[in-house]
Length: 94
Picture (cartoon, rainbow, N blue to C red):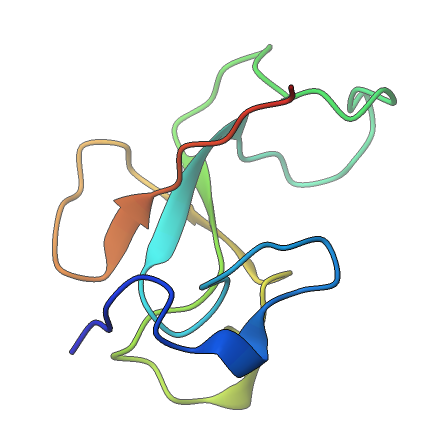
């Protein structure tokens, strides 16, 4: 199952980010696109044009294959889909 937030201190990134893999996939603001053609170059979310799938990143406790256990894993999903493998992360650009 899922782990308590911050319970894996050896996994903290050099930037202070915690719990980036193996808890739940995280929904992000970006819409899924087949290529990066037309993607924003300033690091902002890719919100136009919209699509059928949102991007989820990270990895879920239920999926043990190495392919899915990395913070750079990017999947597409239907925004209305809900189960114990998906969550979200509150973030700030400060």
